[in-house]
Length: 94
Ligand SMILES: CC(C)(COP(=O)(O)OP(=O)(O)OC[C@H]1O[C@@H](n2cnc3c(N)ncnc32)[C@H](O)[C@@H]1OP(=O)(O)O)[C@@H](O)C(=O)NCCC(=O)NCCS
Image (cartoon, protein in one colour):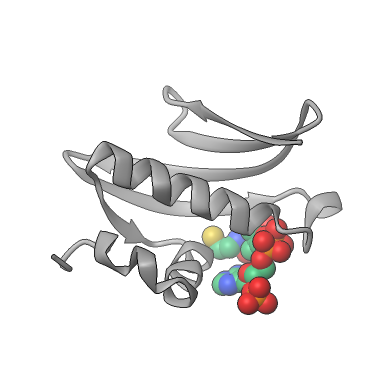
Protein backbone atom coordinates (compact mmCIF):
# COMPACT_ATOMS: atom_id res chain seq x y z
CA UNK A 1 0.00 0.00 0.00
CA UNK A 2 1.26 3.46 -0.90
CA UNK A 3 1.32 5.92 1.99
CA UNK A 4 2.42 9.53 2.22
CA UNK A 5 4.35 11.38 4.86
CA UNK A 6 5.15 15.03 5.31
CA UNK A 7 8.65 15.80 6.55
CA UNK A 8 8.02 19.43 7.35
CA UNK A 9 11.51 20.35 8.67
CA UNK A 10 13.04 19.00 5.44
CA UNK A 11 10.36 20.62 3.24
CA UNK A 12 9.40 17.43 1.49
CA UNK A 13 6.58 14.97 0.99
CA UNK A 14 7.42 11.33 0.56
CA UNK A 15 5.59 8.34 -0.86
CA UNK A 16 6.26 5.18 1.12
CA UNK A 17 5.57 1.72 -0.27
CA UNK A 18 5.68 -1.11 2.30
CA UNK A 19 8.10 0.86 4.46
CA UNK A 20 10.39 1.87 1.59
CA UNK A 21 10.75 5.44 0.36
CA UNK A 22 9.44 5.28 -3.21
CA UNK A 23 9.39 8.96 -4.10
CA UNK A 24 10.12 12.45 -2.80
CA UNK A 25 8.68 15.83 -3.67
CA UNK A 26 10.68 18.81 -2.43
CA UNK A 27 9.19 22.26 -1.87
CA UNK A 28 9.84 25.77 -0.63
CA UNK A 29 7.23 27.80 1.23
CA UNK A 30 6.86 31.58 1.11
CA UNK A 31 3.76 32.80 2.92
CA UNK A 32 0.85 31.08 1.21
CA UNK A 33 2.81 30.18 -1.95
CA UNK A 34 4.29 26.71 -2.19
CA UNK A 35 6.93 26.13 -4.86
CA UNK A 36 7.53 22.51 -5.84
CA UNK A 37 11.17 22.38 -6.79
CA UNK A 38 11.97 18.73 -7.50
CA UNK A 39 10.32 15.33 -7.64
CA UNK A 40 12.21 12.07 -7.71
CA UNK A 41 10.90 8.53 -7.87
CA UNK A 42 13.33 5.75 -6.98
CA UNK A 43 14.39 3.80 -10.09
CA UNK A 44 12.69 0.58 -8.98
CA UNK A 45 9.34 2.39 -8.65
CA UNK A 46 9.48 4.42 -11.86
CA UNK A 47 6.58 4.03 -14.26
CA UNK A 48 4.35 2.46 -11.62
CA UNK A 49 2.26 5.55 -10.93
CA UNK A 50 4.12 6.63 -7.78
CA UNK A 51 4.99 10.01 -9.29
CA UNK A 52 1.39 10.72 -10.26
CA UNK A 53 0.06 9.60 -6.87
CA UNK A 54 2.62 11.83 -5.14
CA UNK A 55 1.71 14.78 -7.38
CA UNK A 56 -1.98 14.30 -6.58
CA UNK A 57 -1.24 14.09 -2.87
CA UNK A 58 0.90 17.24 -2.70
CA UNK A 59 -1.63 19.20 -4.74
CA UNK A 60 -4.55 18.02 -2.58
CA UNK A 61 -2.52 19.00 0.50
CA UNK A 62 -1.78 22.41 -1.03
CA UNK A 63 -5.46 22.98 -1.61
CA UNK A 64 -6.35 21.86 1.92
CA UNK A 65 -3.79 24.33 3.31
CA UNK A 66 -5.07 27.17 1.12
CA UNK A 67 -1.76 27.50 -0.73
CA UNK A 68 -1.14 28.71 -4.25
CA UNK A 69 1.26 26.58 -6.27
CA UNK A 70 4.34 27.39 -8.34
CA UNK A 71 5.38 24.25 -10.25
CA UNK A 72 9.10 24.89 -10.73
CA UNK A 73 9.40 21.11 -11.06
CA UNK A 74 8.60 20.08 -14.64
CA UNK A 75 6.89 16.90 -13.51
CA UNK A 76 4.39 18.73 -11.24
CA UNK A 77 3.90 21.31 -13.99
CA UNK A 78 3.12 18.54 -16.46
CA UNK A 79 0.79 16.82 -14.01
CA UNK A 80 -1.25 20.03 -13.55
CA UNK A 81 -1.35 20.51 -17.33
CA UNK A 82 -2.82 17.00 -17.69
CA UNK A 83 -5.26 17.42 -14.78
CA UNK A 84 -7.08 20.70 -15.25
CA UNK A 85 -8.95 20.32 -11.95
CA UNK A 86 -5.74 21.58 -10.31
CA UNK A 87 -5.21 24.58 -12.62
CA UNK A 88 -6.93 26.96 -10.19
CA UNK A 89 -4.13 26.28 -7.69
CA UNK A 90 -1.52 27.93 -9.89
CA UNK A 91 -0.25 31.19 -8.42
CA UNK A 92 -1.72 34.00 -10.49
CA UNK A 93 -4.90 32.04 -11.29
CA UNK A 94 -7.93 32.96 -9.21
C1 LIG B 1 9.71 12.31 -13.30
C2 LIG B 1 9.44 11.17 -12.32
C3 LIG B 1 9.32 11.75 -10.90
C4 LIG B 1 8.11 10.48 -12.71
O1 LIG B 1 7.81 9.47 -11.79
P1 LIG B 1 6.97 8.16 -12.22
O2 LIG B 1 6.51 7.46 -10.97
O3 LIG B 1 7.75 7.39 -13.21
O4 LIG B 1 5.71 8.83 -12.92
P2 LIG B 1 4.28 8.21 -13.22
O5 LIG B 1 4.44 6.80 -13.73
O6 LIG B 1 3.36 8.41 -12.07
O7 LIG B 1 3.79 9.21 -14.36
C5 LIG B 1 4.40 9.23 -15.57
C6 LIG B 1 3.88 10.47 -16.27
O8 LIG B 1 4.76 11.55 -15.98
C7 LIG B 1 5.24 12.13 -17.18
N1 LIG B 1 6.65 12.51 -16.98
C8 LIG B 1 7.68 11.67 -16.78
N2 LIG B 1 8.82 12.38 -16.62
C9 LIG B 1 8.50 13.68 -16.71
C10 LIG B 1 9.26 14.89 -16.62
N3 LIG B 1 10.58 14.90 -16.39
N4 LIG B 1 8.60 16.07 -16.78
C11 LIG B 1 7.28 16.08 -17.00
N5 LIG B 1 6.51 14.97 -17.08
C12 LIG B 1 7.11 13.77 -16.94
C13 LIG B 1 5.09 11.08 -18.24
O9 LIG B 1 4.85 11.70 -19.48
C14 LIG B 1 3.87 10.28 -17.77
O10 LIG B 1 2.69 10.86 -18.30
P3 LIG B 1 1.51 9.92 -18.89
O11 LIG B 1 0.96 9.20 -17.70
O12 LIG B 1 0.57 10.90 -19.48
O13 LIG B 1 2.19 9.03 -19.87
C15 LIG B 1 10.56 10.10 -12.35
O14 LIG B 1 10.68 9.58 -13.66
C16 LIG B 1 11.94 10.61 -11.88
O15 LIG B 1 12.27 10.49 -10.69
N6 LIG B 1 12.76 11.18 -12.80
C17 LIG B 1 14.08 11.70 -12.46
C18 LIG B 1 14.00 13.05 -11.78
C19 LIG B 1 13.26 14.07 -12.64
O16 LIG B 1 13.50 14.21 -13.82
N7 LIG B 1 12.28 14.78 -11.99
C20 LIG B 1 11.41 15.74 -12.69
C21 LIG B 1 11.90 17.12 -12.69
S1 LIG B 1 11.90 17.85 -11.06
